[in-house]
Length: 386
Ligand SMILES: Cc1ncc(COP(=O)(O)O)c(C=O)c1O
Image (tube, rainbow, N blue to C red):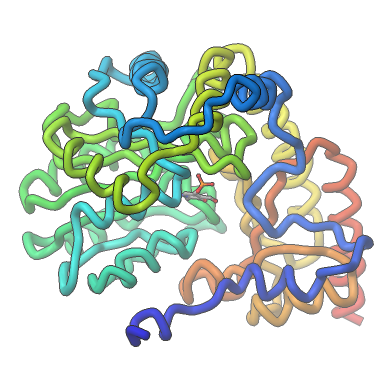
């Protein structure tokens, strides 16, 4: 076994979840997914595909009609792009891995904005790259970017800048000005940007169909790879379908990498993706409205608890907060499961920078569950203060 694999930390979210396995009294908000199943019109498209015998391999880069639909979908949100820039993958996490395999190898430097979903930083480590972490900073309770620190960390020795916004777990989003400064800097240093924008639609600012994207400001030839997924915007976490937006020159290499990773996404899953995109305008805004209701219910209730510090996230599906006096997030999350039946993700799962914080996924069909969870947290906080 390569030592780098041995040294990878296990998932601390799983560690907490395992402590609650077999207990149906636990309110679980630890994983990054809604408790609502995939819409029926999407499921039916997969059923029809299987019934029609679509059980074979497809092109490495995806069904031509799905690539076309993705080019149209992306062009409706951002400047027009060509279908040659699209590659279909078997999930957002596979998109991330393939992008990293294409761009960074042994001893290459990858700069990552953290805290972040741990898969992003584990992947370059698996490939033997070194990861330089640049931490977001807490200002007035909200996680914000120290742009000067980030620009100082990205040098002409940096192969890749890895940046996830809207961010899991903090809810931090990039501003247009920050994006411009980062893109201009990376053009100077020759650094690739891998932008994980899987939460771009889960964005709550008025009159915005999507969070600011690097696609809005970059040229087609820029060293920019955008990572995307069907998981969050279409409630399709279990389907494992994603895509990449690439400079055209990178697409053939990515096709080769897909061959050696998964060969292709399953055709019936791609058909489900096509159905999702066909109804995107009818479905996604409603989902975002419901998620905003969840956010607007949970955050004020959390903020009203004694000793709780929480900012309102502009995007994503997470409340990221801390409870005064609770500095060991893994121990506290385990304790909340064991004694209060409340399942949260420990901040430490996203890096040392987030120690002492907790992540609460608020994507729920039943907002009353969120209030019930808050009651449990209140009781736990009050009991600890006695
Ligand atoms: C920031 C981020 N990127 C990528 C993913 C991957 O999503 P999936 O592999 O389900 O498409 C997730 C999932 O939680 C995520 O939070």
